[in-house]
Image (cartoon, rainbow, N blue to C red):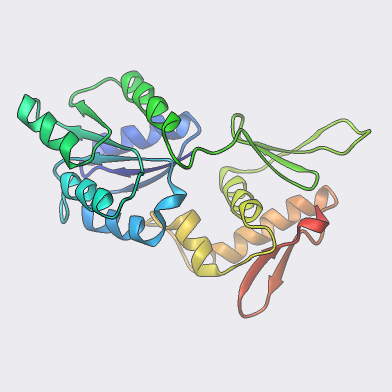
Length: 232
């Protein structure tokens, strides 16, 4: 499950990111509302749910909600704010927030509210994603090989390798450019460098080759990479 977290308080943002990742969420954390809107305009469908702070630099969380709903965008939104007046709650909900959490709050309550929003998400992911003999399990964040007559075998992947393989399995036979991969996997990471895509692809292919998937992901020179489902 992928979450867009928009929170400009560094300590709270780090705590939320750490908690969400521990619960197996993939988190894109940004501290500016204008940057958050760029992510949503680029491809909002990659997110299962969004968490907006009300007061943000650039574009407020309230304005982000209004823009989403004006564009008929159904992405579930949890609003975080210190504003606890009834009028403020009404304003946030009327702007398009699906739920409203007042600071300070407990992480257990936040996670419970996210689970409720996920159940209403128009892009709730299925429990598993399968291409050929490869099965990606969202509930356990694992990838396994299922071949009739053989005992299922797990492929040990890092978090980034898992995300990368997931992206390719979601788009079999489709050429994914370097820019698309960066936008999906690394868009919110400040320490990103230009060689990381090629390096991560080498690591993922090496892991897959160990299990017999030597030609699963091919390089389409000058364009990007493509997963060949018949090789799975």
